[in-house]
Every structure is written in C-alpha cells, then in structure tokens.
Image (tube, rainbow, N blue to C red; front, side):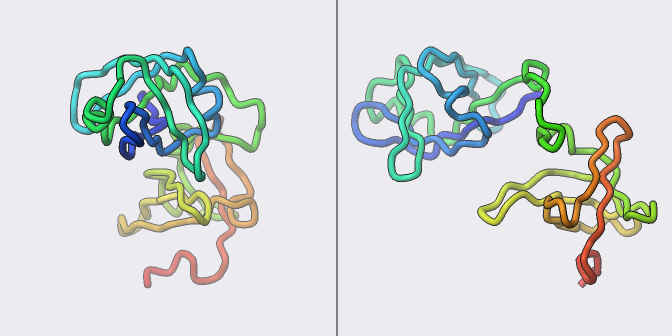
Length: 174
C-alpha cells in the first residue's frame, strides 16, 4: 500500500525549489539529502524517482531541491505531485501509542460497553489534531471522532478494535 509522505504545493523561486506539504512525522529522514523519493501526479499511474539534493525549513514550510529539477518551469510541472512510500518498507513503531494511518483504517470502533459504532474509513489530519472518520454501522453516516486519549482510550491492532468513550452528543446524528 502506498502512503503519502508529502505533496508538492508549488514552486519557490526561479531555481527549481519546491514547496512541499509534509505528511509524515519524519520529514528530516524522508527529505534528507541523498534520499530517493518516489512521486506520482494525482490520478496518474506513472511513478517517477527523484533524489533529494537539499531541504530546508523556511517560514514554516519545507523547501526541497530535487536532482534534475533546475528551473521554475520544471518545478511548476511537479505541482500536485505526491511523494509516496510503500507501507511494507516502514519500520514498526517503537511507541505503543503511535500508529500509522493505514494501521487504523478499517478497524472496528466500539463503545466501552462493546456496542459497535462503525469502522474507521480514514484518519484526517487538521490543524486542531487528528480525527478518525468513522462510517456508522447502523446508517452509514460519517462520524468524526477526535483521536485523543480522553475519547480513544484503547487501540488494539491485534484485535482490530478501537474502543471509544465519547462525550455526550458526539455520536448524535445532528
């Protein structure tokens, strides 16, 4: 399974530098000089390979130079490109309370009393934190659950279950 670790937002300057939206917890490793990146444009089958020449933080954004991208025109052609890694190549997390998004997707969500709420469709990343997008088991509606310990006390990958203790009203259809 391919996991997105970054997305080219736009070019920066005239020498081919790219503004990359980071979608990984390890940007210093994923975008380090010499690292080979696999990238594909949205809805395209072709995967291209790039080598990172340099990366730096600038005004809260990651700026990246890739080998072979030497001017603004070449950089603009990469706008929207997704940098991906294969989930099989990822090391297991050393922290039992950290999870890759793909590990959570598809897990059954239950209340503390065992009542099935639904299953995780996607993990959403927002400025306010992570949210679990859950498809309700009873009517198929979308439920957004903040992925915080107070609401999600238990995640068991082995059992394929996430236990939630939602505050009053969180699961109400309105």
